[in-house]
Length: 257
Ligand SMILES: [Zn+2]
Image (cartoon, rainbow, N blue to C red; front, top):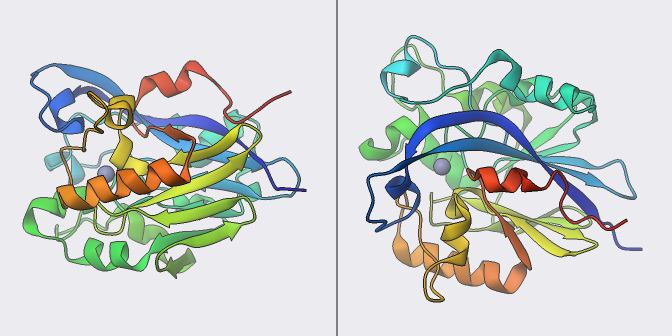
């Protein structure tokens, strides 16, 4: 019997007024939107696998507030507290996948004691010493700032390329937003669902314009982004977004009663 998953979006922080043009390359607008940070919980319907994709941002400190602006994280947004408030014991999480190591995707994983953390080797290498324009995203190279992703480094399992996490769940190397970005593909009763990280911040990145996907503005190479979109077309039936409130229109994905 195939191992199917049911997915649930969890709110783990928010950007109250995020410029749309930062999500969608060439968007001709100065408008801002409120954007959530989403952690995706995926529970197997037949085994004890509970997979978490990304874990959200940390609350700002005096130091990080100097370079992260417009981020709102409350105490109750911490991933282990969010899990508990949704009836899930943080000890149940078996696997964490970081789609990439930007600060708003990989904090507080140290509070998930029984999980390993899967991350692409290229992403870890880049996060340690990114180009100057990408330092903020990785919180790298600031005095008195210990990057969020490093706090659970002892649990890292470094991967390279496409890897099966458990039956019914696999990681696709999907560079574009960052050098070591990944998507996670889940088999569900309604087809293959992809959690695509920040390649697909908003539904519009995927649905696009006149049949063409829209790359995120923050990217490490447009060609890589479009190669990754092509891979997603082949590998997924439904693509979920990482910073889009419309994801909360459903509380469960991939589920049929
Ligand atoms: Zn990112």
